[in-house]
Amino acid sequence: MQAKDPSGATCPRCARALPPGTAKVCVYCGALLRTVGPASLSVSLGLASDPLIGATVGGRFKVEELIGQGGMGKVYRARHLALDRLVCLKMLKPALLEDPTVVGRFEREAMAASRLNHPNRIQVLDFGRNEADGALYLVMEYVQGKDLRAVLRDEWPVPEERLCRIMAQVLAALGEAHARHVIHRDLKPENIMIEQRRDHPDFVKVLDFGIAKILDSDLPGLTRADVVCGTPQYMAPEQATGGKLDARCDLYAVGVMLYQMVTSHLPFDGDSSMDVLTRQVHEPPVPPRKRQPGAPISQRMESLILHVLSKDPARRPQSAEELRQLLLAVPQENVAAAQRPAHDLRSAVPTEPRRSSQRAKTPANAPERARKRLPSSAIAGGAAVALLAGLAWRWQRSNHGRPMLRMSAVAMPGSRDAARATELVRSAAERDAAGDQGAALDLLLQAVEADPENGEAHYRLGGFFRGSQPERARQEYAAAKRLDAKKYGAAVDAILKGP
Image (spheres, rainbow, N blue to C red):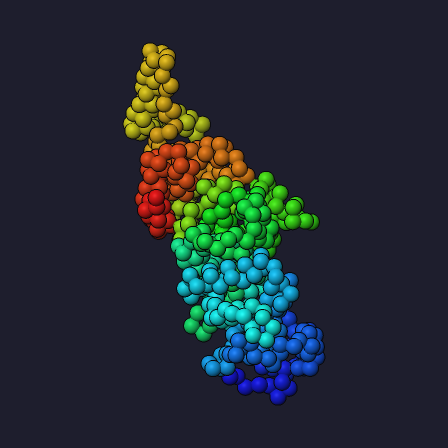
């Protein structure tokens, strides 16, 4: 145990002794301290009148402090007497024991916990009923840190590399849950705890599987199929409409949190829950760099967020692992792009001739001389283009019933327009997020035409053709992997191995 400060004041969240002074927040975890001193702190949190303080629950857990409460019950910091270890004790209100839905949430969280074993998921240690009053309790590991909401409040803007590292851990925990047929359904910053460990800064714990959906369970559903369950601001469109859910609804919630982390705003909010749900279903998100122009948001991050926030689940990444790989590739691509301009600018941007004074003295008949000095390769190239155009015209006259192939679909030497292709891909992501798949597909085809070596365009086309043209989708995915194996290799392998 840590040594106590002589004043006796401790943080209500992390239980560490507070240094002398009048700080308003805990220097260790950032928790708000309304007053200073043990007596006033207890009164401000309502601890003095709580009958459970000092009591022992389940014969093993001594309750020390109230650290949170809500409509379902209270959350305490307690100590495991046998192990002398701090734990988090969630107690259901005795008055709610007759409500099968609320009791079902407790049982659901315990069942979900029994299936999952991942370092980034909060560990549930025990579940039972208190003999004194019959209340249900859930015992979890005690995390000394602060939730993602507090990180955004206190430390925004969060560097992209850091947010990618945080959310990759969230996706790792989700990948384990989804593999065990468990969907979280209520992901939000309040349910993501960030712990600063000596050997691992920003260690993540995913909390609260209280409304988790267990796909292969015989446990009765907590609600009817058409009832919305979750937090509106983080709900996928299919969740907002009471539709059939799968793991991709959790990925949408991750997309919302990513949007919030880079812009400090929610993509959809409103005056009421119904207003928010309506926007989730019908409105496209404002692109992050338009929503927060001054924020350090890379184009790759913006494109990925819009991809994850697609209204149609089939347009999103199809697994937590696929999204995790795409997310981890963002900072790598940003570093590579920062190192690239030194070459690209020399080869792509025309430079001014050094001897500008000589050019100013060029005689008036210089254009004529220049035409005379045209290299034979340029003359031959022009003749070849003219010949191809003539042959195409003759073929078209003799084949009225057949459509003529567009010559621009074949990349001619020097015809790559990487900048235009990148802009087209970005526009396609916006149209896709807005639900206009036809326009998005057309923009992606134009992007490949402008630059056949744009890996992102091929990857997105693979997603479009995945359900309708499997062989075409396979070709597009293979092209994306060939062009950028570091960014798309693992994701493509995961997709192609799927059913």
